[in-house]
Length: 292
Image (cartoon, rainbow, N blue to C red):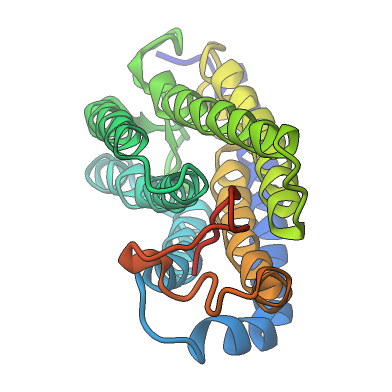
């Protein structure tokens, strides 16, 4: 049983989390509104492709599911109702992470010139990550609140040290492998003399994405190793929302560079057919690939 002091402190952290979550969700929606003109020009006006589907799912599933999650953070639930509902929060949110990883997978596959070993290696790694995420779901439990209160998912054991920490560690592993593959390939291209804008974009976005998401997931990992269940949940929404926003802008940035890349290499469509497996080289002898 938690002491009254522990419950009071947990309720204080819950209020902090509610304000924090509301603020970053508002920023996410505002970012979507600001990006709508770019989205219309670079996504909606293009033919349907794998990357288009991933972009739309990543953007709109995140807004929907994290909106529902914010509702659970702000609403009042009885303990019995929250016990039944709480597992659905991480269960729905995990697909935000999975979709983002799929975008990075396609992007990495492209820059490696459709290398089958890279493709199947990343698919295997992603399958393992999904298995870890699914396995950790049944361990989540509600943050203990006296009476009625918000329904917030947190770690499953009393001391906070349980398998739910893998929910945040597994994306770190996948993202680290993707960063290594991206850096290796980009540096190799540069040593060969290829320094196109699209290659620099791959490198810049890859490093920035990894840096932001790695820090957020590392904070969550540390928090989930702490004994306070309310503290564990504080930064979870930030990781999911930042992951989604970063991947959305990765795709939008690549689409923006398409016309410049086509003009530079003179090889017709550069991104448009990549999702169908038809990406072309950046240069006649060697180069990176783009995505559409």
